[in-house]
Length: 67
Image 1 (cartoon, rainbow, N blue to C red):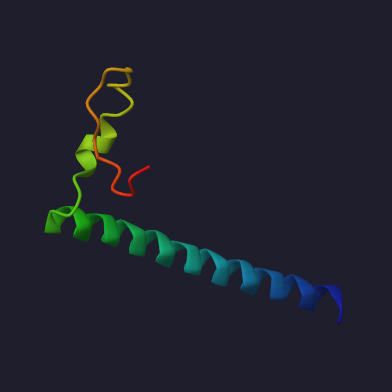
Image 2 (cartoon, helix red, strand yellow):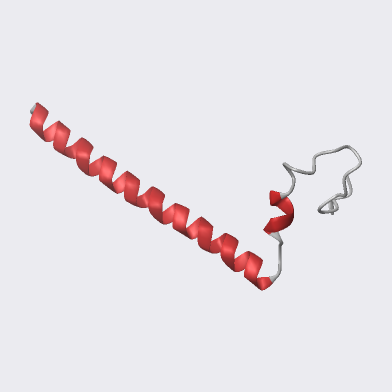
C-alpha cells in the first residue's frame, strides 16, 4: 500500500471513531436526562458536592451493600 491509501484509511477511521464517540456521548446524556426525569436519581444533589465538602456534611446516598 502506498502512503496515500494509508492516509485515507486513517482519515476514514478517525471520522468513524469521532462519530461513535459522539453517539456514546449523546446516549449518556439521554440516559442522565431519562434517569433524572423518572425520579430515580437527583443529580442536582451531586452537583453540590464541590460546594458542600465538609466532614460533617449530609450523606447523599446510603451504602446499600452493607460495607
